Amino acid sequence: MSTLSLAPAPIRAGVWRATITQAGEGAPQIEVTHLEKPIENIRLTEEKAAGRWHLEVPIPAEAISEGVQTFLVHDRGNGECIGQFAIVAGEVLGDDIRAEVDLLRAELDMLKRAFRRHCVETG
Image (tube, rainbow, N blue to C red; front, side, top):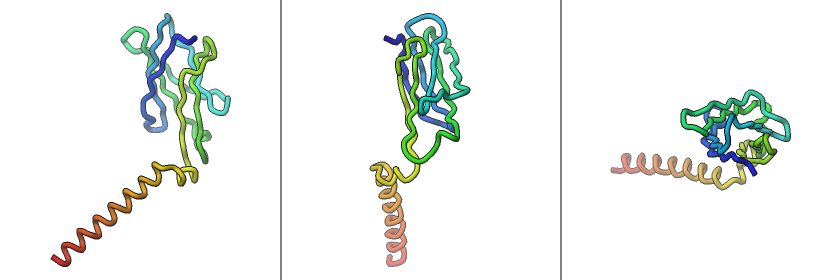
């Protein structure tokens, strides 16, 4: 069983971040994979609080493609998966409820503007 726990943060500027808490000593041995291939240039920096580390994973451009792309975070010490994150892109979003809600919001904004313009013109 892993001595690591992971608390993810939002993706910003193409970098996924997380805070890792470790019960043991020394730097955690972390590997992040996409399609079973390791992601290069991940950065792990120690926080001043003992046992806490900041993980930064740059998302490679070649990993961004149509559909859902899943990245797995492993504890290399025992091979256990301690977390994951996913990126969703392309046509698959058309069926996603969040994309539908965004479209409805845009349409509602358009209707509000048209209604306000109508009120000004007739009032």
